[in-house]
Length: 287
Image 1 (tube, rainbow, N blue to C red):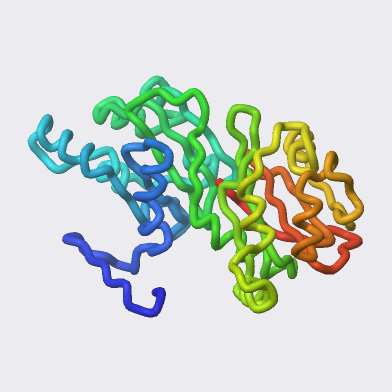
Image 2 (cartoon, one colour; image 1 turned 135 degrees about the horizontal axis):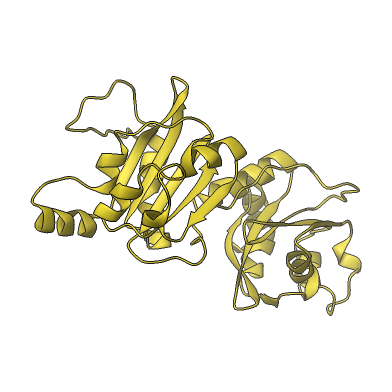
């Protein structure tokens, strides 16, 4: 793991190695979403069971002080197993989709078997999303009217886009208050090294793009976001600055073709120095 060894352990007995990826990501999910807990469910023996779990330290301490024990919503949930298609988690697993439950304690047991537990531990809202072959569940003691966005290992996902498409950069644009800005960017190390040798600095088309903000419906990225679609632009160097404000930067860094895809509440943008006549196929989920 990053040139070293990741060691982790538990006071409980493990029959198999917990899913490390999920274990490492759950604290970040709580931090970025405001959730007080996060669970990762995966299929085992024909049923869905919790393989990784996390509760925020503050929430754990508060529950211990009020209850006098170490039980939390996640410890109780770990004793539950579900069929594919059963309840919120089972439905999300079967559909490979997502669900938001604004008030978990109000759902009947047929729809959410842990409704009584949610009420016992003060869980109001929860979200479930198909991720990494299983279901990511996270929840809050506050009411959510929409699913909070979480960004899991976004740089690694952008790297995968470049690796699979041959792109020399990838960006993820996130929308807030009608404006799109770059949340994360990636350029392959070979590309960065080649540009540094040629230019003498660390600038890339991706780093230059970070300074731009684009209104929904404006420019290449803004129009793709507004249409919730995807589009290939084979030769952005031919565009006017009005249509593509970064056209001069594209010429400066030798970017010719750009593909944009509306996904995950934002826009994935990636491009190449060669001309693409058809958009490369990539797999990307921003959660």
